[in-house]
Length: 555
Ligand code: ATP
Ligand code: MG
Image (tube, rainbow, N blue to C red; front, side, top):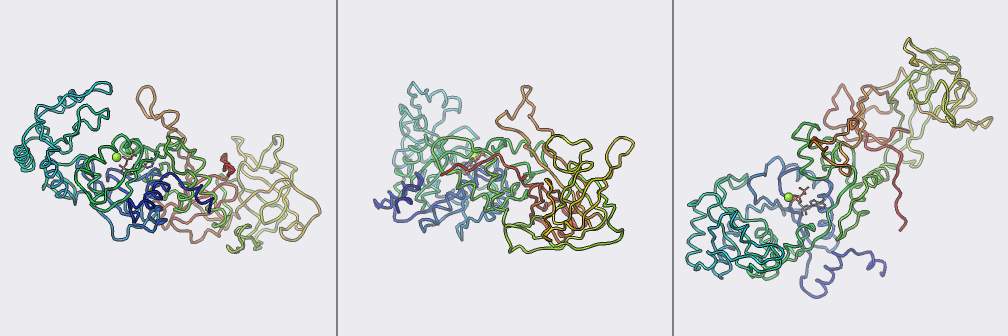
């Protein structure tokens, strides 16, 4: 019990206190994305946090599109966001909302403020409003329109709605305090005129509410108790509280801020991701080099791995970056017992076993995953001609190289010992074939103990091999080293994508379909690409290599 208390994050502690003190008798959270791009790993953190809290406290979780800004929003994004959240496993049940559905209520709320003498129509230009605002050290100056009568304000606001004014000609401002040390409280603009069509309401409106006014109203209408957002809104909280208080909601929601998730070595900002997509540097929002949720899914990450990652990151109030290697650690952990470990050769050379009879084949037993018997076993055809990795042979071995070189013996995984007798080169000096002899006594599983070898290499039987295209990835841009070069161009990694046009796979890959993933022995975890795989051609993305630089800190 004591452990449980200690492990609670600061948000859970605040919720516990609210419940204990009777401020709220339930927990109701929401995820409020703006539909102006695809979701990324940072949003996943927010989604799982909000959904997780609702579950933990037996409360509710709403999905709400914060679509009050008509300029940047698109229906394509609405659909992708819904798909991503469902994939992550956050269930909004029947509570899918659009902030734009509340425009009428927001208008009424503004009228209410006007009637209370708490809002006024202002004719200052945007430029003037800025200069009247003051600075962090100096108070602002009151607008000359601040003391308009309630009647006049009501009339002007209605005229704003009716389309009598051009964009920027008039705004509605909250009447708070031009001397407040918090700049957000210096009579902030809460409505503006904008003659723009909206993806949901069309041309019904030509005035739109500002975020700081709209958001608390959306929360209050939906009965949200804990409105969780990121740190940049901390200074806006007094305004949030002011809005819900002045509008006299019976159970006002509470805003709580936490630190955004940043990952090292990758591009996390929606703005940067958008640029890569729009400039055609990546092949869409789901390019596997990105950390949008769509990209992570296409690359082969699982909802479980992302949940594990978010849990490991924890929730905090201070800004920090998490190592990308931790995300890789999570997907390895998730897949290592769940997926078969099969053999695939990415950079092949032919290996010929000179003393193995031509035309002969035998079927060797191999466990699919030595650490998980439930995954069963398969038969691998073994014959005279195989493929092995080019790097598993060296004409002149380096020190401590225990793989194939003339005179050396290694184990072929699940099969026999083979000894390198000779090799063949083409005119350019490139190795084209390695010749070996095998020793029948050394069959895997036969209990042979006669002698030992230091190296085990994987292989694929040449006549039975399947082929596939395999894509290997590196970071596209290292955000830590700078997204831009000095001349303003993007600092791209030229090696972010390597395409292996023809890799060889053992026949156990038969039936592989989009999103299936496997461990390729020694080469990493790979997932069938859902976009480019066809009946004729199998395409794999490397999710992650097997080696890790990341160590889970000891608890
Ligand atoms: P970006 O900064 O990438 O453009 P955003 O904050 O503009 O993202 P919204 O659609 O407004 O994107 O965000 C929806 C929710 O996700 C907000 O509550 C926001 O605070 C949260 N969120 C956005 N980025 C992160 C992040 N990196 N870590 C955690 N939560 C995030
Ligand atoms: Mg935003």
